[in-house]
Length: 420
Ligand code: SF4
Image 1: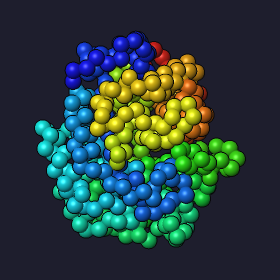
Image 2: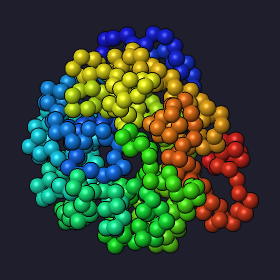
Image 3: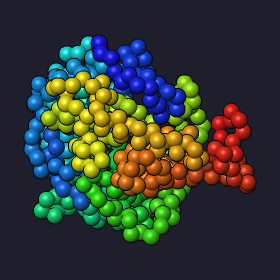
């Protein structure tokens, strides 16, 4: 790394203090997530998918992959392990032999086996025993997308012919379980499931699923509207989450639920995701905290959902191409500077106006952009559903257990220096 970076002072969200990015202080940046798109292609066609180019079967060239890894390891931003998420198309639609060569390339970098944690986010329909052998051999983390029982799952997750994918996805889940592949499930909560938390909860329990993430259907990228737009108020989302939480509690918490785990950790371990100065560390809003690379080598930062999306204000969210530019070159890109300035302005407004700021850090820039039309904004349905509601539900429950009848705000009523 031998280049001088941005020379003009600016503010980054984690500290709120002016920071002059240069090669001397670049180590303050940290790459936490690297998303690589081996191919934009997906073998199915969910109607809420945000990917615009999912019929394109182009596959990443190994020269592009090598250059990507050169850029990553040359950046000086790899310290604690980086999660490499193979995504943005169906990763298992690319053959195992491609990954065998890709992993050989990646593992040729010093300590890559310790510094890189691989992860697949898959629709599960292509899982077989050979995949499981490969996954187990390389210790790859797996997230599988299942929305719930058949009529729920197939409502949105269909093939291009309009057929349901439930059967194939459940076969994939069974193969993962039979091969003892550790996995979590990601479910989109949409119009078809929001009123049926018991049915969704029972489905997980009946199918030996132990870890879930609940994504409230979002307006994002090619998904220009959400089936939840018409549900008439967010109290139904709250009721879903609350009932789900209570069922899990009544059973002794057999399910790890990402949103409630994060809320509990925020309450019990304030500082677990904070920087030394005490501000919440939000990887998605941090410059170069996430790097997203498409199969052609174009890359962006911030929310992965933004990569390659066309916009009027910023053009497409491409800040460079690994074949020509280093990751730091992105920081000189006008679109990058504008996006960062807008994200930080929105986050400053969050910090001034929202009692959840210390537990959130501004949440997801892509949701601000797609819901509010600008990064320079605050609340979204996504942040209410994934940050605010889970925190309220867990905190209310803790207070009830402690016999606290006068409810306090998680932040504004907090004694100086206290956890909650
Ligand atoms: S919960 Fe929403 S409004 Fe509050 S800080 Fe987070 S993103 Fe901003």
